[in-house]
Image: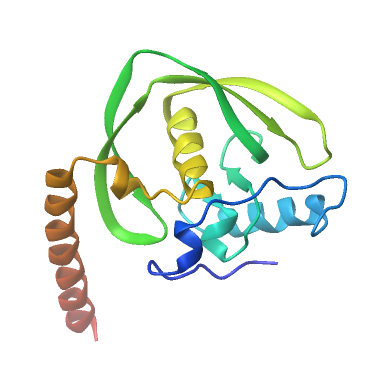
Length: 172
């Protein structure tokens, strides 16, 4: 099943999700993982959290080889080296904002079958793991960024959307 995305002003995006209870699951975790990953794969994005599709569960999917679905994720260690790189989010179309994040992270999460896994990620996988973990904590990437960068990105987003509308009119 492909889930619908919530709007940017949806209250669920500002809420901290509770731990997914594998002893008394609110939904089948394996089916939830399949549906979340299928929804992610229907987009051009690299990751998707449950709150972005209106679900209050502490789980997200990452586009990787193979795909990863993380329940109850947490960071257990981070590198001291940080990188300032552009991020975008499917919830906020065309809003590209530079965000500083650790280059490398060690994480622990539960797989859909209930197995606990510890892994080390770097590069884009680390960045999007942290981005999605922020969603589970009710934090948006714009809150992690420098306010000046966000304001500049908002202006650019407006320009981009105006240009897209003009381009659409020209093709009709």
